[in-house]
Length: 489
Ligand code: NAP
Image (cartoon, rainbow, N blue to C red; front, side, top):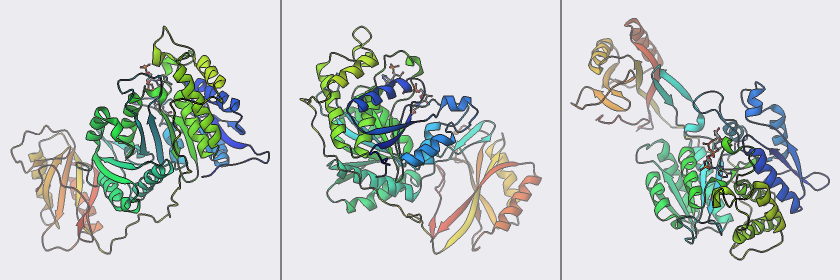
């Protein structure tokens, strides 16, 4: 674990208040940490909406990056991201800039917070891969009416997150890890996490390892959440199920998180900037307080973390000061009153909270070449050509078949949004102007060269067919590197 201690013995932390309700929740956590007497020196920096307004497209200014490089530890409020248009998320930028590849999101039942699950002892942790998957953010409009987002999953990324999950389980004395994927459908991408998990699990014989399909995981989480201990999953799955798990224990106001990398750790609530509550002094700061507790453990301030956690639980057990998300508007206290109550309870011991084991997480040092697979033999056996045309598959198919005459490839099939539509099998697939045309090496030929592909593309352009994307079809050591279309033989 990395952090910076000043000459006067203080631990340096970059503090980003954030947008919307961010400054209020961050102020609450900061007051509690200071009241607990933790020796921290804050470097207050900006990111998010205020930075976009200054014209900095990334939402993360250089002096914030410089501060994080120095401190290696961040406590941050939520940052606003325009939905469906505009700048990219400054949150995701921060996570990626510092390769915080693992997002740890605990959901543990709180005393005094009534939910349909109260008394069932929910105490689970979602470990979400944090930098890959659909969050690579590589999107293209393939045609004016068809959008594409690339889902990139690497062997290295899978190994890092799987090892983090097992090491985290050990650090908290947990006994079970579920790997939740959609490997039944996305066999290569989601399947890579499953395969990596199954390879690595035997190295942790003290921990039970199970695979579960993500949709069933969502179902089981609602039906019997207490069966789970640690769940490791891909970025998008983890984003969604961790909001679900927060609802099991009282809502987003109670869900903390830690973004962990080998160099930097960023602590923040799972929730966003909840703009409708900004400045109203009414929101629940527990999620950020919980994130701050995780940060204190990262800073090896175990005693202070336990002291604050006890004070938080005592406050909830007393139930005198509760925010509106727990008790409704009529009985609610302000964010400030709730914070004051926690501060006044510092030093008291909770009757219900049982401390978990909290050893530092043993982070795995990934070598740059980790997961790099170099095949002995690679063979290009065709290519998928994506054609934009609003026409019937038969029309495009016939046109392409003419073009393939005298070339090393033949048209094996055309699919539309993944379903084979040519040659027709009599299905009733609706089609759009985005056709994936699979051109495959003729029998008896050994390999397709780049020159063959380029010369075919030149032929295509002369016909007025518009191609917008091409993907090579390869074999690595005799193994196909691509999936078949739905309905393809
Ligand atoms: P949100 O800000 O998390 O708010 C969704 C709802 O959750 C709120 O309306 C409120 O529910 C409840 N909630 C959230 N925080 C709460 C708290 N501290 N106390 C009590 N209730 C709380 O999600 P959003 O409205 O979808 O997103 C708003 C903005 O935040 C977007 O720009 C989004 O991109 C951004 N965002 C940032 C982060 C981040 O910085 N890590 C994460 C997620 C979203 P009720 O309406 O039921 O009261």
